[in-house]
Length: 78
Image (cartoon, rainbow, N blue to C red):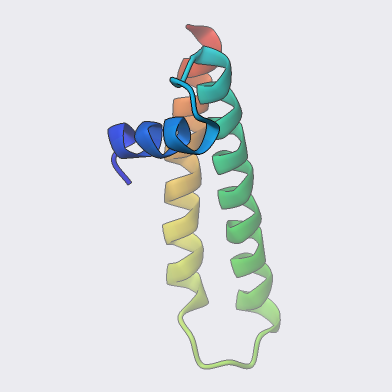
């Protein structure tokens, strides 16, 4: 999701403009959620009997997590 759309959704949900603290909180929750999904996919690669490409799903979620982590790191240092 483009960042401007994410910011608009946050502002609409909380009923106020997105400030630095809210942006950091949202970025942290996004990173945590993506890390959980990537770890679930890793476990599923090993244990699931479902015919699904969990390796690709893991790679996709790890890439998304890395991007979210980079954004959080930038927000934390600015």
